[in-house]
Picture 1 (cartoon, rainbow, N blue to C red):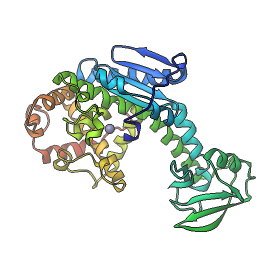
Picture 2 (picture 1 turned 60 degrees about the vertical axis):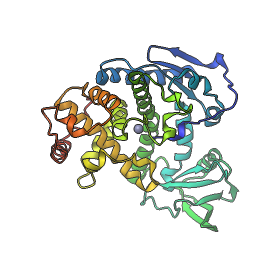
Picture 3 (picture 1 turned 45 degrees about the vertical axis):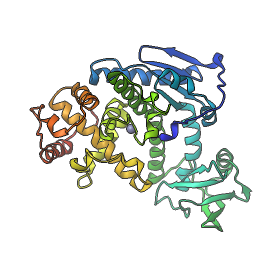
Picture 4 (picture 1 turned 90 degrees about the vertical axis):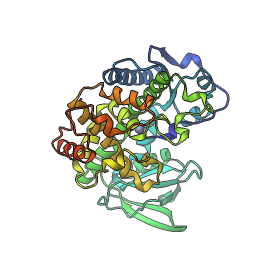
Length: 384
Ligand SMILES: [Zn+2]
């Protein structure tokens, strides 16, 4: 998830210390723009720390988490002191930002069947993604919305406000640009109080999507705690080298650890809201699983093109369910054992490692078959 949230360089530090709520605990320093955001983030980090203890048998080393109210604020923040002090840091957007921005851009989607957003470079409002084929829209992904009923569209907020003023059942004219050509589309505004089944489903999806994006803090914090753990065990910081964050090295986690394990750790430590979906995804896939031979040797699929979005989801889902399968056959701190071998072992062979766990096959094909059967009978709701 979200390399977006690591802005490498900022300008001058412009903290207004009075407005910031912070805590310096054993495992994290947290800074948030207000008490509401502080509480949400602290609850999340406390949860991840608790889970980390379960799988690693100890508290994670300290990281720093900073919550920002806007991407602009994050961009101008200077992270140099963290790099100098060798503290792994995680910048994250506020809950309010996710709600405002995502809801703002999602709200009309329920009725027009398309999610809109502002292109930060051109300032134009465009269709990011179609949300449903059967809402009955003539919009297409990539369309730029120039005007709504003759009025130029300048921001998502303005679009939303103007859209809300239009009476249900009336015709809406959208002047759009598609493939460099102007077109006028007309759609009928439906009654927002009487959503049909499809619209209700789309709305549900949008709400779920927003809450999952917010919960992503747990996943990213999991990565950071694990990076800090690896550094503590090897006695050297990733920040020693080039003053860069690990993700700048083409990895999502620690650059010395294979991607499959970084995602195992991060998905195990994340909020159950995310895990439930991953288990359900894995269970639903019958012939699209990644073979274990490929899984243990591949690069993180999210570094490839966007077309591989689905592959990325499978990669996460497979990492989580395989970790849970192994733990169920052994014990939670099996994760720590694998981690410690990866940190210290020059040559790590998963099959050699599996030989030490008597209850699972060390042959990858056999393991894959057993795990596949286990997944097909998986209870997706459980909190392991
Ligand atoms: Zn991840």
